[in-house]
Length: 172
Image (cartoon, rainbow, N blue to C red; front, top):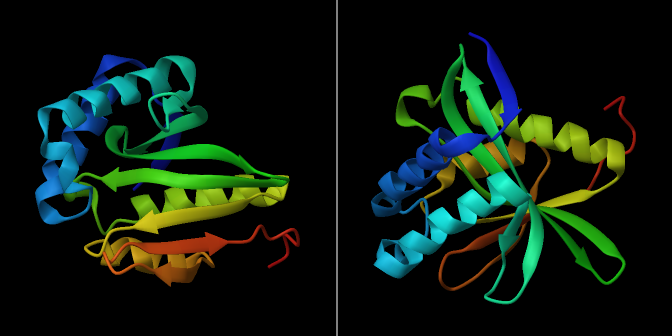
């Protein structure tokens, strides 16, 4: 099995990402608010914006740099990751904003490989990574933990926040 990564490009990747997210909303892996027609349409616009401009809307007025990485397994599109570059005062962070793998490609290492790919890139730049998970995302919790993410806080809603400091010593 060969897992590879590439930037998102074109309408087929936009539709793959959107469709995968919408299929997983009922399973609790993505926010249920996406089921509203306005949020659903906004999600697609945001995905398209990220593919074309490498930016996404954080709010109606704020845009932030964002990047989509597609995951291919044996040449077939299998998943995606969306990261956002954030600057909070003097601290640079990279947020794993959304990520997913199609059902038929789960448990083959696609998401583990994607998170490892991100961590290796950010380690070289000395940038920490953060992630926020919904309660249903137990599999992703295990993937994050295997890459050194630590749980920082869990809100009453069940959203859990994780952080991983950059590892500047690449011998680990």
